[in-house]
Every structure is written in C-alpha cells, then in structure tokens.
Length: 576
Ligand code: 9MR
Image (tube, rainbow, N blue to C red; front, side, top):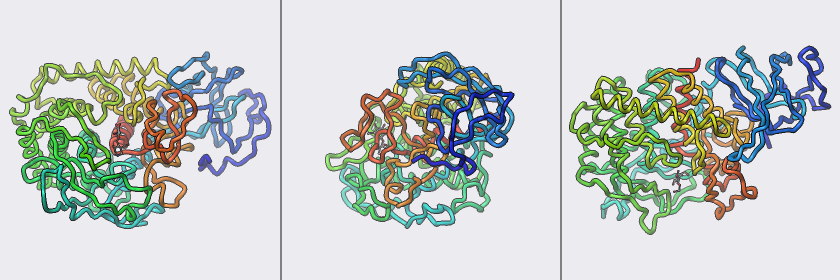
C-alpha cells in the first residue's frame, strides 16, 4: 500500500484528455493513483537547482507538463528527451528537464499517457525537515532510556538495555568483572553497539558541526535535552560519544563491540533479553575511536571544555595503545555471530587518527607518523567503514589550512578536487545522475559518501557542478531512482514501510520509525537465505525490496544515516 499524505488528491481518475497550455481546464483530474513511472525527488528541489524527472519510457510520450498542484495551471510544457537505454537500472527512460521552473510552489509532473507524478515542492530550505528528521532518527535509536511519548510520539517505547553490568567475553582479554557501558544508539535494525560503526558515523556527523556550527540550534529536534541552551545536534551526538568513552579499557585500547552472541528475534528492545557481552579489542576500533574523540575535542570545546578535554585525553591514550598494538585484527570469536566490522588494512584508520590528533593538538608527533606518499583519493563504492576514514582525515585537514604544512594542504586539495571531478564526470554518464556503478550492501551510503567528496570540493572551489553533483545524489536517494522510492523512512510519498528494524517490525504501528535510511540496492542479494524474495534477475539498481527480512537491502544503519545527514545539512546551507 502506498502512503499518500496529500488530502486534496481525492478525485477519481476518469479519462486522459489531450492537453495544451492554452486549455488548462482540460487537465486530467488528479487521481488517487500516481504514476510510478515518473521518478523524481519526492520532497522537492531548491529554486535554482537543476531538476530532472526520469520517465520510464512510454513509446508514445513526447511531452510533459509541470502543473501547479494548487491552481492546476500548467507552468511549463516540455519535450521529453529521446529514449535512453539504462543498463544498471535495467530500464528504458526519457528525461524531463524542468529546471526552468523556479517559482516557489507545489507541483506535479504530468505525462499525458502515464498520469501524474507524486507532488513535490520547489522552495528554499526544501530539505530542512528531512535534514532534522535524519538526526531525530538517531534519537529513536537510543538505548538505556525510555522514549517518552512527548518526544517519540506514537513510537514511544519502554526503557531497554541498561548495559550497566556487562560481562567480558574472553576475546576482550579480560577474565573477570563487568563493564558499565550504558547509552549510545543501536547500530541498525539489531540491538548491538559497535565501536567501529559508532565512531565512523560520529566522525561524519562532527564534520557537519565543525563546518556549519549553526546548522541545528537548541529546541529543533524535540529530544529530552531540548531547551538546555545547547544545540540539539550536539546533545544527540553526545549521547553516542558518552557511550563510546565507556568502551575504553584502562590501558587505552577499545573493546570492539557490546553484543549478544546471536542476533535477537524481531522483538521490541525490552523483550530482547539475551545476555550481552563486551567482545574483542583491536586496532581499528581503537584508532577510529582516537580519531573521533580527537574531533569531539574540537566540536565540544566551545560548549563544555571539561568534556572536550576528557575526549582529547581519551584519544591520546587510545593512540598510545595503537602504537603498541599496531595491527590487532578483530575477528568474531567462534561463538559470536553478530556484525563483525572486521578489517585487515589499518592504513585508513592510522591516517584518520593522525590527522584528527594533529589538528586538535598541533603536535607534530602525529604529523610525522602520517603516510602521505601514497594518499589514495579514489572513491570506491563498498569501502565504507573499512576505508572511507582516510577521507575524513583529509576533510579535517582541509578545514584547518592554518594548521598544516602548505605542501600537504595543496596535495590534499588537488586530490579531493580531482576525485570530485571524477565523480561529477561519472554522474553525468551514469543512470539516475548519481556517481556509483557498483551497488553493494548499503549502496545508498556510497552514493552519499561520494556526494560528501563533491561537497568538500564545492567548499574549496564553488563550481556549480560540485553542488549539482551533491544535489543529484540526494535526488537519487529521495526518489529519482530505479525503485521510485524515497529511501528515508517517513519522508516522501513512497517510502520503505517494512525496513529490517526490530522495533519497527514489532511495535504494531504500520509506519516504520521515521528518519532512518534504508541501505538501498545490493546487487549481491546477500539475504535470499534469510527469506528475502527478489524479482527474477533484478538489475543492480533494482536489487532492493521493501521486505522486512531483507537485511542486505532494506536494513537501516548509523553509517548510512550519517552521510545522509551530512549531505542534507550541507545542501541546506549551500543551496539556498
Ligand atoms: O554494513 C555492513 C556491510 O558492509 C557488511 O557487508 C555486512 C555483513 O558483514 O554487515 C553490515 O553491517 C551490519 C552489521 O554487521 C550489524 N548491524 C547491521 C549492519 C547493517 O546491515
């Protein structure tokens, strides 16, 4: 069932009437059915952005109309492009370019032979709600407190997972005792917490805060801390950072994760009662934490100097542990089957930690450790939490030109601009104007991580092509894609209803928890044994199903929400 929230769309569809701009009264009436063949950003567009809808080809269609959905006047009549044969999407399409419409309003695209598109807006700050929603999504992932109705609305739920007395698994190196490690966000649709995938997204969230400290003020998110005089964004991020700090052992090393041995059933958090353990200790978790905590020092220094110092001291201590243990790989112990977040290459983590610690301390010890001779600027889909950290280090260097040697700055600037040029060129050629051609688990985050590189390029050199690249990546995620779905739950007309998310599956509420980003098409179809049913031989961009068992295409995850928030926040600041 599609989810329509426009009350005025109630008139039954009777007959297509051929239409011209001079006889507006002959527009076909709006119908309850919208054409899923017309793909566009279901939220909307900034007035001056490039605006393209993709029409899944209909032989006879030649013209399209942009209709003001309030006055029902045609504001633009356009000609569709010739048919394009898109292999990644597995579709034949025509493009409707309606960039010429810049007036504020709510519109629909009408293609006579197909019907109307979903309504969408054109206005300044058009993505503000989605931006705030993507951060509020983190609040819904909080553990250790009840989610009260006044903040969580119908998704309120009981307190669960206090995590105040967690036994050590032998893999942690401890033989007895317990760890108090409360709070933080659930990683994804599961109820565990992982240091690699807690600190990597925090790094992306912090980047936005460093670059646009005014992006979210106090009282914007309706979270428990709203009204305390501090940015709600910082309050929400602190909830996760507080937890991460608890995972540091006395010797500085970081435990890898806090987890059950097996994934829980699809039950509410307070019904998920299996024993949780502190598992593993390793170099990736420790270096990612060191980087993230060093960044936290800068981000929190203006609001809470003590906390900022605690973070920096923890970062230094973690780094020392990593120096003494430079390549301790984490592999799931035999009896633990939850997310591994394993990695055999530590270079990116070293780069990120050295970069953040240097920027925060200006101590050349970290700079001297930096391997700069083979900096890799090539974005690769699928690297995500195994490799994207190096970019986070580079972005922080670019934010602190004053701190770093000019030759290093110049090399990184050049590398990022080249990388962004490459992504812009790819997006020009690739289906749905987005920059990736390989669709892994969490592909939506790859699209957005690539957009983050274009965003940094735009900050270095405000060429319209970089901004457009980031905007079109967002258009893709919000509906201009081969599924015709806006992948952020609750935002758009056709959004995922059956995400792989335990609370959403178990709470008895039809709508999933809002503000969470579905992973997106995954051409590897890695969950068929778990009960997911895909159409026969789906194209890479259509390897997504709105089915709850589909953990490999339709789960949600912190490190997917993070670049979503970053790019939404960036666009809100730079597109208006
Ligand atoms: O995002 C992760 C993806 O890159 C891996 O291929 C996959 C299998 O190991 O795991 C994904 O991460 C999941 C994690 O292991 C557990 N929590 C949910 C994460 C998102 O699906």
